[in-house]
View 1 (tube, helix red, strand yellow):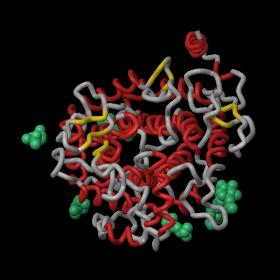
View 2: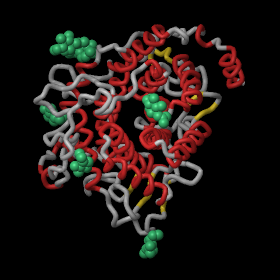
View 3: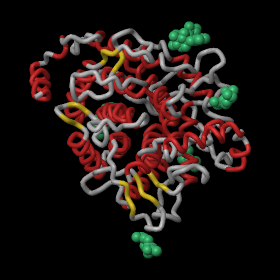
View 4: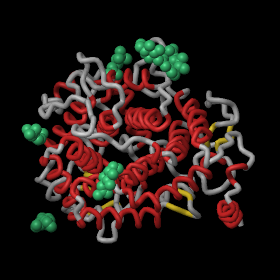
Length: 456
Ligand SMILES: *[C@@H]1O[C@H](CO)[C@@H](O)[C@H](O)[C@H]1NC(C)=O
Ligand SMILES: *[C@@H]1O[C@H](CO)[C@@H](O)[C@H](O)[C@H]1NC(C)=O
Ligand SMILES: *[C@@H]1O[C@H](CO)[C@@H](O)[C@H](O)[C@H]1NC(C)=O
Ligand SMILES: *[C@@H]1O[C@H](CO)[C@@H](O)[C@H](O)[C@H]1NC(C)=O
Ligand SMILES: *[C@@H]1O[C@H](CO)[C@@H](O)[C@H](O)[C@H]1NC(C)=O
Ligand SMILES: *[C@@H]1O[C@H](CO)[C@@H](O)[C@H](O)[C@H]1NC(C)=O
């Protein structure tokens, strides 16, 4: 019944004037920007890293380090689309603080929580900064492009042909849970960054890697012939035949976007077929009554903290795809608009943990018009994403080194033995160890957990 009502009101375009705390006129660019500004304000209020004595780049508990990287990526896009630079300073400061001593997003403080995917979300924020001409850091600081290249180089060095014919493991360090798992999001970060570096720099090495990573993902059965994207494969005794078939929106999104970049670069029918296939699977599986949702856990209320943020990244990568392959805009844009309307309709909460404007806390599920009270960085970032990406056509296209990009690269960045276990392990304090052990027990498996260990 509710979905029928929802479909009717969507069809009649009535939602723009519905009663909600954030009133948006979707045909008015400044009204949409204002709504994005309200939601962004509530999002940034969760951040404590610029408080005196706190560490720039970190979100408070219960958010993992990677999600902060994802959040700064979203804030770069927020500036890029809306021109509101209110959060640019905290964003630069956060990213530059978290580069770590080798300038590769491996700060020793995160050794117990950091896997390849965690590193990747920060690297993608740096890549976005280069592509969107986010203000370059001072000369004596690491530069956006070089940071993305550092992570690329380290990923390439972690490619493991000994098991499953290739692919990267989830974890970087043997002592973190999940070392025997090769997951799609880690390899998706590698693929996405490789494709974007190929486009930005024109260097074929990156494009060759993107091709190789896709080939491995499909060969390993993690991207099927029907373009279903599965979560990962365990090395174990089963000789890489034990696949976790959970389908998460961000896994599909990260490969879709990378494929669209490769299509843009090569104009090849192979990449077009892949991109089209993925897009069609995404709009089938992750959309209900014109609204994006987290298929695997949303309707059963089982999405954990990490998973509560995934569909926002799908929005990010759909919007980015519509720029790389403009003909997809006619599929993607209406979906983002109908989803954004549903998202804003539940930005009506006033919760004790929420410090944005009263009555604008965003709920998690958009499948009904009832605010579900699941507030936090994920819900807030998801809603921000859907709202602001409806304006993607107004934003500049990502630059390359030949079309106005100014970020300084370094093809040799990274690779300074930063994987050296001893170096990192010796810096883990006793307190870190105790803290990490508790976390590991609580979430049984580490960052982005749930996926491999709860559901397999
Ligand atoms: C931290 O940044 C936010 C957003 O720019 C700002 O509102 C807040 O005042 C800052 N806090 C401090 C202590 O500088
Ligand atoms: C950002 O930092 C610059 C330089 O310190 C300062 O002039 C500017 O006012 C800051 N902007 C905001 C929004 O805090
Ligand atoms: C690591 O932790 C220390 C102690 O809390 C802090 O001073 C430092 O800024 C942190 N470094 C990073 C990169 O987070
Ligand atoms: C593991 O799988 C590979 C590739 O399918 C195959 O070549 C190899 O023989 C298998 N090894 C075992 C021990 O089953
Ligand atoms: C690649 O992206 C640019 C920028 O959006 C666009 O103008 C161009 O048409 C795209 N190329 C293809 C083959 O779609
Ligand atoms: C292309 O990238 C590879 C991998 O980082 C690097 O080794 C090579 O020097 C680069 N080529 C050029 C011309 O920059």
